[in-house]
Image 1: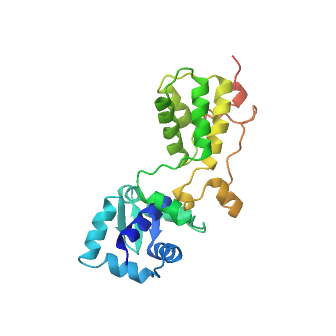
Image 2: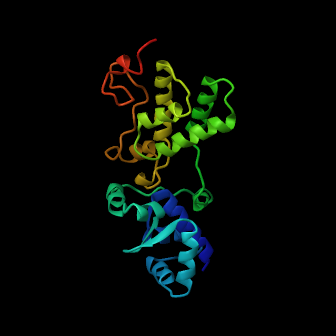
Length: 237
């Protein structure tokens, strides 16, 4: 039994899902390696007085913790007591299980997957602010993508520019929101068990409808003011 590989699978599952049941981890290992692993095998291993203690210490280095009921969870689940809420919101959604090579990238807790939409955002930032350094634009894009992993918040997106004293015109705000919407819809989310909103929408439309790609001038403003877009951030001049 390759326990180092088991730890990598557990860590990857937690980074993708937030909550990883023993049974799901066993299924992934069995499907992608020559080992046939059961939920009981993982339970026996993790509860072993010696081997289990070493495994838990190694997992904690990856910010993964054991949770009652045969679960592995991310540190934030434990710190903010979010197990019940997160688990409830995941119900009925299928697990995203990529091929082994991609899956094991997620075993690194610092892995940061950047879809094409991330690069489109960074390119947009550099095109709108002449002379901005690549490292600076990258920092903005990364901060916004981290937001995209959670509920979409136009106010928080705009605050990333405001706190850096970067001014946006109404037209730029509308363009930015379209790009960020696409980024949100193509970012892997733990609440969706690793799926992007677009993927999940295609699999089961009742779970999550992707955000609209454009903001109409008569629609509520993306900043949350309650005004129509044309009378707020979309106001000309």
